[in-house]
Length: 375
Image 1 (cartoon, one colour):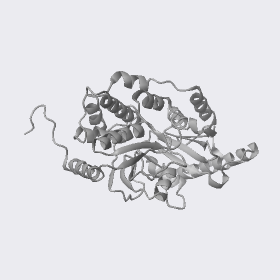
Image 2 (cartoon, one colour; image 1 turned 90 degrees about the vertical axis):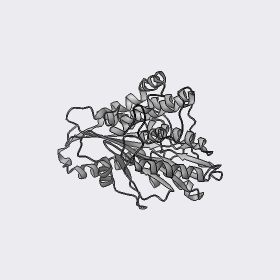
Image 3 (cartoon, rainbow, N blue to C red; image 1 turned 45 degrees about the vertical axis):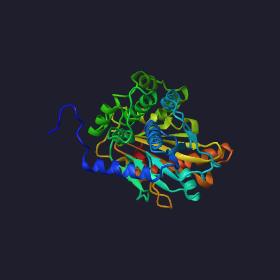
Image 4 (tube, rainbow, N blue to C red; image 1 turned 135 degrees about the vertical axis):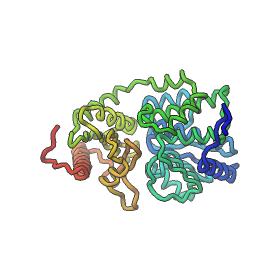
């Protein structure tokens, strides 16, 4: 019989996961690891990586957090600046020789391709994969935890509650950690609208340690003028078909990548729209280009992971261009040979080609006759 005030033991599966993770961390004590975020990381990824860094340090492992792209969303900037989270941009000349292993957090390598390829070239093994998206491939990592919960932050909160690291409410860094995880959880569950029982349980645990004032400051950030302009462009360019709102927004700076999912969130609020897809060509600092898009849906019967994989297909290596989770997804398609070029005419032809191809694939997927397209 359970005693009042005593936390019940976690299910056997949870105990086994916890024990296995602790064994892996103990086996790699004294090493230096790279915690890899997806390109243009979101609050869930950032907070989960922050948690993994804390846990690693407690087990005698030094961990650096790296990412490609940029941190541009106003809340993301507030998150890392206010809480002092150290993230390192990954550069072509980043030296990986000092790392004994890598950890994928909130992705499975498919949305951090440049870093994944660099790790492979440097023969740095992927040791741990922690993610809440649909499984993208069969990983050979030593420890893989992929679960259909609302956020990766939920998974790390559960590990903390199970005792992998003892949180002290009187320690500022522990309050910062709980605050970050709470923000990641809120963000990825759309303020708990898409949360499940495990997410609510994780939030209840984190609420004992989080800094409510700091969390309010992080989440109270206003959208930038540039983000508002991109949302306006998506609204002007949208095509509505069979409950889908589809908008191509042209070229974007890498600094504005986070405006794409925000625009999709906004388009989803329109009457008679159940799914919004927004995409554009992102220009990197060294002529790299790729098509990036976000999907948001309120339609329960639509699986974003299946939809994007079915509509956009896979590259030659077998890696899917898109994927997702319940109610949200994203895609990234390299421009490759056509990347770069200063001619405005060439840029416009390139955009028209990619825009037409992506729209046609999505229209084909939903069975929509483009001759009936309405603005």
